[in-house]
Amino acid sequence: MNEQEERKQIILAKRGNDEAFARLFQANYTFLYKYLIKLCLQPELTEDLVQETMLKAYVHLQSFKGEAKFSTWLISIASRLYIDYERKQKSERKRLEKFQQEEKRKLKWSVLSNGYEWTEHMEIFAELPPRLRAPLLLRHYYGYTFSEIAAMLNIKEGTVKSRVHHGIKRIRKEWSS
Image 1 (cartoon, rainbow, N blue to C red):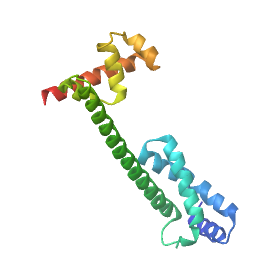
Image 2 (cartoon, helix red, strand yellow; image 1 turned 90 degrees about the horizontal axis):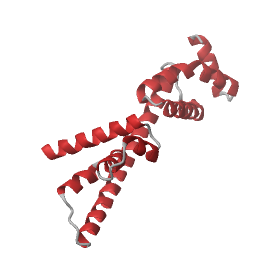
Image 3 (cartoon, helix red, strand yellow; image 1 turned 90 degrees about the vertical axis):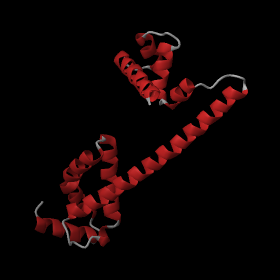
Image 4 (cartoon, rainbow, N blue to C red; image 1 turned 45 degrees about the vertical axis):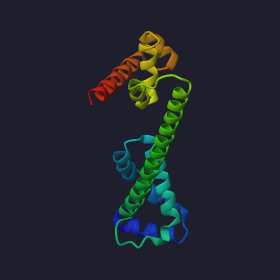
């Protein structure tokens, strides 16, 4: 769609013509999708953000002044939506970390109050994410084979090996610190 045709569609869309907005959406979809996929590197999130961007553009179309290209306006909306998404994710991660620290503190208290020892090894092990902790525990504490662990956790055997390797690597790194 050329610049003149785009301006015409914007005017029609601002007057309430949904077909004109649909044409603007179709003309800018690929450009917007390519931008967002490069920005967030997640296809499902990209689709969600494209839809959310277009919804915001539709709702706030009257605020488009035409000082820049329509695609530039869409990119600014999409960028803000992505930044908001990242802020929410960061907040969620912080809340999850706080929850995990609280759970670890409760576990430590429970172990100590029952007369058991909370060793430095347990402290380091508790810092591992569950996706690494489970295969490592099953392999080196309980002695299961990689294929048995893969079946138990419903993941590929190579993934189990990788997670055990990365778990051991992180533990060694902590011990050497």
